[in-house]
Image (tube, rainbow, N blue to C red; front, side, top):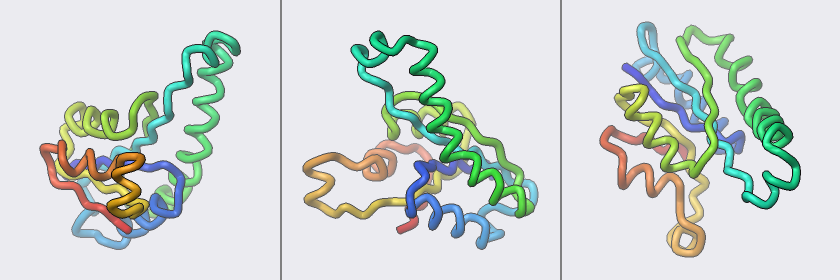
Amino acid sequence: MKIVLAVDGSKCTKKALAFLVTHENLAGEGDEVLVLNVQPALPPRVRSAVGAQVASEYQTEEAEKVLKPISRFLDKHPIKYRTEWVVGQPAEQVLRAVKKFKAHIVVMGTHGHGLLGRAVMGSVAQKVVTESEVPVLLVK
C-alpha cells in the first residue's frame, strides 16, 4: 500500500505518526510512505523584497525543521518512507501528491477546530476528506 502522511510539525502530526507506526496493518513490510510537508507561499512583496534565493532558503529551513525529526523517528522503525516538501496551499498539495504518488490512503492529523473554526478559517483536513479520491484517515 502507498500512503501519503501529511505533516505540519504540530502535536497532531505526532499523533498521526505514532498511529501509523503502531499499526503494522497500515504501514508494514512492503508498504511505502510519502511524508509530505507543505510550506505556505510567501507573499509576492516579501519574496521580491528578500529575493528568491533567501525566500527559498527560508522555506527549505522551515521544511527541514518539520521533516528531520520525523525522519529520525521513522529511521527507528521498519517502514519504507521518503520525505518531500512543496510550496502551496496545503490541501491542494496533499491532493496533488496523492495523485502523483498513486497513493491508496492519506493519513493526517486534524487540529479539531470544530464547526465554527472551519467556518471562519477553513480546514485542510475537511478539504482533503471532501475532495480526495482515496480514503483519508484523520487522527485527532
